[in-house]
Length: 495
Image (cartoon, rainbow, N blue to C red):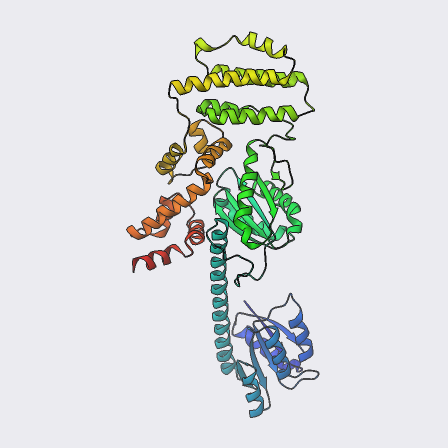
């Protein structure tokens, strides 16, 4: 239904127009005003929108021509029809100069009225279609430019870029452990638009990660709380969030990298969901919990270089954690020793009871650190002699190449390698410099592009064959990555 405002100081004429609209079932919702001034006030209210203005010329306070001039300033796309009992050529000429759509004489002839209104309604539909198309194209272009900026492939978001009138002042990275955004991304975005009190632009990066661009960085922390609460309450989804103010649009890629690194701390703090920009730099600081899971993963994967680094981090944490009792610290070292000894060859395993006695009889933490380093060093030396191998990114990539067409969550991949999801991401990021889910998403899109050029498969079948069960979501990600729809990409590259 379209909105029409009928303006006339004659109640009979207003009733006549309203009757004809209902009789001929024109798709119009009617509002009325008795003079031009009253109509102008209705146009000025932000909540009102009228697709068509149907107005008399001779009215008190403000006539139809004066009203039409003001409406043209307030609402350029509103179609204007003037009707009057005065067959005055000068009125017609003035009406043309201010962009009036049509001019009807009183009394209104039904057939002529229906013909004019049908033509005007068709014009409104065409205008709205063009507006939707322009908005869609603008949104696609903006999303593609934002994607390029996040990935450091474009400087088009510099402060001088004419495409963006507003400068972003804050970024927020939202991450989930599964492919939440490929399933509920649009609904999640709509919920956030209703929930957050500050305007933002939204870009989905891959099925498990999205980023929000804020124009007012003052509301980042309450917005982060709202994002986490919305995901949990509305979608039963746990997510973690990192945010930071943005010096300028040209810093998007740099700040995004910092947010990525901050979210890696989720490995050390699995229960934490908001990572503050001014929070502790050390991954274990103020954790209230010391876990040896990361050491267990290192040992299971025979990644002894990472083991030594993680031991160093853990020892540093223990030295600076003043609230822990000596008994608790010694207990932690005992658990560490048990883990390491388990992976030593049987003929090199020391007696665990004697090791425990030595730990609990120690007088300072340095002695305990030396003991642990000694056992870890023995394990690494033994592995080097036996040419043991650790998990490398090429194994992970090979698994992705073989299974990218299937649903691939972090839990799926980590279960295959018998490690935790966070450790899996850490290994892959350390060796490749790339986020794992981003790698999967881009590989799928590249395979889709190949299929578009080399086959005649339908787009929805291609989407399904590369791991995107939702064709609409696939098309959105393809446009963000390549800057155009799959159909346009196929047509442009083929001809």
